[in-house]
Image (cartoon, rainbow, N blue to C red; front, side):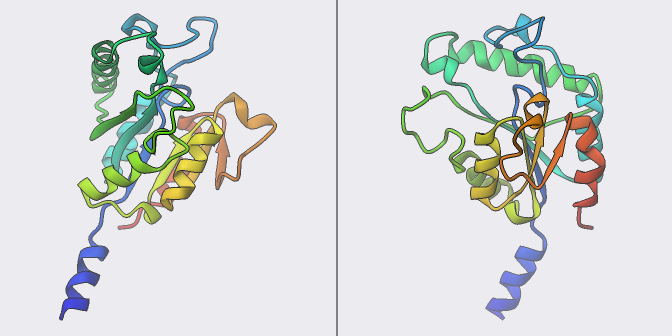
Length: 191
C-alpha cells in the first residue's frame, strides 16, 4: 500500500518550465540596455509573453530562476530588484501570461553560495514547494550556468539566444529565442 501511494503521488507531480530571466525573458547587453539595474532598463524580448502564456495554457508551472549578483555587488538594492520583477509580472500580464514564482540569488559571483546557478538549489527548492518533477521539466537559459543548473537538477535543458552560435554547453535543444523553443517545449508536456 505504501508503494502504491508513493507511486500515485509521483504520477501526479507537476511539470515546470524554469526560465532564466536576463537574455531569455528580457533584453540584456543590447543597444537599448546593458544590464537591468532599474525598472526602466527592463524590456521584454519579442514573443516572450505569448510563449509563457502558451506554457500556462498547456498546464506547465512556470518559474523564473535568476542570478542577480548586481545586488551583492551594490549595483542595485533588493527592493529595486523586486520592483523590476513587479514590472516583469505586469508586462507579462498584458499578454495574459503568469509566472508562479520568481526565485533569485543576490550573492556576488564567486561567493560560493549554493543557490547561484550553476548550482541547482533554486530549482530544487521550487520543485519541492510545488510538487514538481524536475526530470519531467525544462530549464531554459542563455548561458552555460543555466544549462549546468538544469542538468544538475535533472531537467531537460534549452539554450536560447545569440550565444548559441559557438557552443551549446550540452543543452538538449538550442533555439534563437524562447518563442522559437515553444513547440519543442510543448511536445514535452505530459497529459
